[in-house]
Image 1 (cartoon, one colour):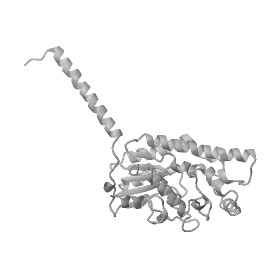
Image 2 (cartoon, helix red, strand yellow; image 1 turned 90 degrees about the vertical axis):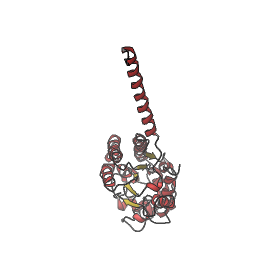
Image 3 (cartoon, one colour; image 1 turned 30 degrees about the horizontal axis):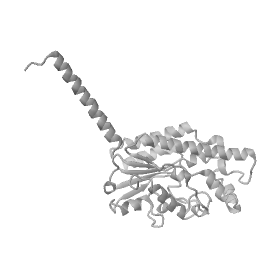
Length: 285
């Protein structure tokens, strides 16, 4: 049977429209893909800095990954790893703690690359405190640079053949950490001797305008970093979940902070981090 030119054109238009609709439906489906079932998660990796290494929770100036909010094995902390195992995830779920104490956002992509080689299917990220905790306000990582670093790491994870689910935790309020212990002589002495986060913690008893403004500038930069984390994660709606500012807005109390440096989370603080972040994960909400 012969088909007229007009009919052929109409058929071509209909076919092209069907392709466009199919592509649109596929994109919409991908953007709202369901999270990976926990029983399929066999490897997880944690990226970040000393917070994720649980430094200062079992000794001064040492890492204590067993107490990590992300991959720790301490039942007191009840990490994401243990919570996954308590769901449908296999008991032999492997947890790699790829975080490195002292890391800035510039180190995040290398950690992400490591997680890809480990075949991680679930990845947690907690980064940014060290970008703001510098000797001076001027030494803080520019927000644009922080954005580039975070986006590079997320792109690396997104390109993984294992298509990992990603959880991004916000940065705690450095202003809050200062406010909690600024009246403590032990804390002030420790901050000074160890040179901890001097951009925020220098001259801790000063109420002069210059010091108040300095602290505000540091917290503002942290706020900007958290906005970057939210936006960068939001670029991968099918695979990335941001904590919605749960860590950033949490009002830490003294028991949440280690008395070894009056800055890092204590064991109790790690448990708090595990609890408030897990509530924002792909599987809990």
